[in-house]
Image (cartoon, rainbow, N blue to C red; front, side, top):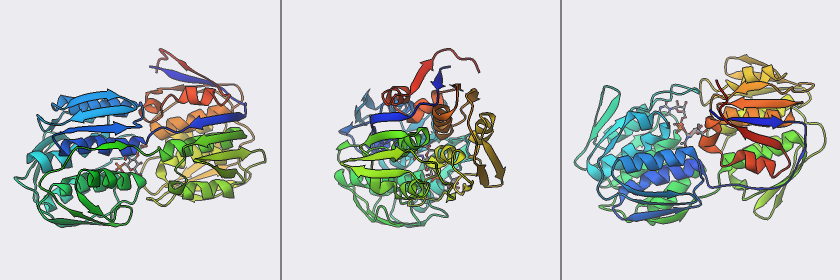
Length: 419
Ligand code: EPZ
């Protein structure tokens, strides 16, 4: 397995461009199943999860030309089955369930199972499909769903779920009649999916609010769409530049989707100036600790919690970081403490005290965003850091070592690192 080796202690300077959004591209790739024509996606990031989704669509019989930043998908002759060996690689594969049932009247999709950050149930997805008239049963780890024709209904989510909202928006787009989704997720990626569904001829209103109305159609047309920038990749580079210190222009940043993060970074003493389509990050003074609680959008993103924690390791004082979205998203803490951080976890809150310095060492990535936090810690640490299992990073960050290298970081990918 590959690793990333970082020699830290260097401030960053220069400019970095943000790629297309992974968490927007994944549901939109699944939306191609709703139409029989050839759909075209542009500004698609070159990531493992994109390749996995292309492989899943091809396994089902779609014609897929996956050449990021352009991906073409034709879903004409489709076998509505998603096998375990692909679904286990990427939980977001569950997003094929809604489109398959809506278009083909049945689906057999492996249950995604949990992952490092939590049990990740899909009960809300299944309850919603049942409300639309699907018969759902589980058998040997697979979800079997059937419905001659889905019918519009009112669905109230027990909690805002991003892929739950996306799955049911797609299913409702081909249902007969009107569907109302209540307590929906408000993430920008939900809004982007609604834009695509409306391009396909669906009638989706209210995306971005907690109540979404969908007027189902008998059929939908293919689409041509350029994906929005990745707000979490953008946030990761803003935090990396602030942690390492220096003066960096992060280009193509969806500032309006990062208000909670930017507000907390400014509270910590980081200078963030809008500059055209980008943000200039300057950090030359000591950082102040600020408290953070993650919550569904527009709150502080759980996907930025691990990265922000590294910044708080460097800040004067103690920062309290509470993770309210997932039950086990502090796995980066023991690895950061091995680098000299001073973090104590009590339940869902991490108390992050000022660390005089971080020392480079060998660390192990456990999930996508924890990997990013370990790389950021390596940029700051004295000496050399080796981040193992960097395949986690490749799932969500396009050419991270090249982008950081262009900012002056001493970063390299190393092959065949055991463990
Ligand atoms: C999406 O995951 C993102 N993935 C995650 O990003 C992100 O962390 C998460 O939303 C929260 O923002 C994609 O968009 C592909 P949820 P998702 O359903 O949809 C509970 C990354 O790093 N829940 O919004 O799976 C769930 O356990 C990834 O790019 C149920 O109980 O998250 C969690 O506590 C990691 N039952 C909460 O809701 C359900 O049926 C929010 O989860 C569904 C969710």
